[in-house]
Image (cartoon, rainbow, N blue to C red; front, side, top):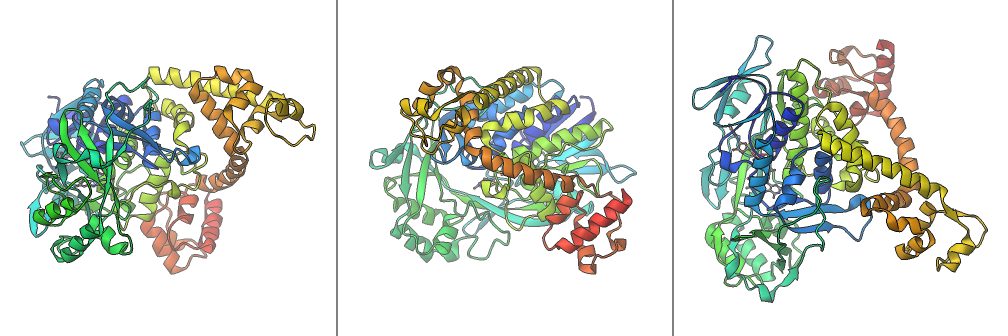
Length: 618
Ligand code: FAD
């Protein structure tokens, strides 16, 4: 094997796979170094990709030609758009995947990627160059592999430790050894490490569940693909079941809290607020009598069922008793107990907006190692780190950065590098102040052009995107100019103020509760539009007034956002800053005035002083 690569990616999880594929798409000779080939693309926890907020990230990764959405479509066995009854801005596409098919699809996409080599080995050390930056990776089997840039995406593996009741097992996840050598290497590099935790529920044998006693939850028909490149989903679709905890479940959990690894005080790491364990739910929402549990089949030829909503670190016998208290699960057999896992993560405030460690040139971090939770959050960071590592390795600057106004990916990275994390970070639509613009349905229109400029979008997607973007522009122009009189609209059954003013197609589409069939009858050309085009018109009509206001606000903010703060600016000599502000700014080293303004505790007065100093410098 060639022992020199432009980019090495450590870790074949969701961050690592996107990082490796992304770097290789940009032309970097890339090595994906991961423990085991068989666990590439492994879903450590729930067998699903997407959801509210997360689905937005998946579509954005897809818009930049990432692989997650295509693999999810190839593996999808139950697809549902969450929040369908709400506005398009907060709808979340979600695909439940057959685990084996998902791993196979990811591996297939990676193996087909020119410029990408895959090697099964454990990274145990890092060698630095004279400038303090990355020079090479050292593996457990004695290799030294040199690289131009390194992306580390080790997930929950850094000094990982599983907890089940009082049992502790050193592991990266069940069945996998933890990464200890790399954690020590990070300590030597002076990276700020801290502990976090997450958990997973027991898995059940589907043949022992009384499905006929449960409410069934079918997926959407037809299932909508996650990727722009997928024509349709071809796998057989399965039905999920819905059960719930009961007062008896809660009483049992309360009686055994002292045996839970989390509540017994054996875990110090903080867990995810938005994906709490069942112990957490019972304690924090003591007034609730039941919590819903979705029973999700893990594969087409696999009887394992994932009970979504009851992650736990209680002892195995208590888990079995707990399961038996839920409707339909009286005789359910546990095939693998739930567990909590505690692991090291790096404080992401040590990173630049390109996800490069500020103190170690050419070292990039992405995924759970940065304090996030979830496959989609990992993939989004992996993609950005991979693109930046490729740019860096070719002697360029790491400037592949999306703003908060452009993408959820931008919101995610900005939140991480500026605010850090106090608990595992999960994406929520509420985190995005520009969420009316950042819809899952317009990710391609927002980002693919940028991806083409960055060199990470292949010709097939580029051509498809450009044709669609042109069609949207045409359809919008026609929908703005084509209009009808109120009298004509009323004749067609559209109730309307008879003020004599003509209404455009967009104005008619924006009428509250309008029946789409009536709009089609009034403007028959709408019937010929492809569904994707039609939904762009509907979203535009619905959000146009808000969008105009939001865009004006964004322009103002972006002017600030663009005011670059030089890397070598000494905050301690900026006139007008209090010593507290100097300390906070020096610690965080924001890259722009906009990001300085979002730092916790930074006052408007400090921003004004900084703006004056920057204008003077510039
Ligand atoms: P991972 O998917 O963990 O991948 C890490 C990869 O790095 C693995 O392939 C590993 O083999 C490899 N690796 C590690 N160290 C080395 C090394 N030294 N050398 C070579 N290869 C190495 N997410 C949620 O959203 N909700 C949840 O409730 C939830 N619960 C979870 C419960 C458990 C028990 C676990 C383990 C994870 C859970 N997750 C949950 C998190 C989800 O699995 C992760 O967010 C996601 O997988 C992170 O992706 P990643 O790419 O950062 O890391």
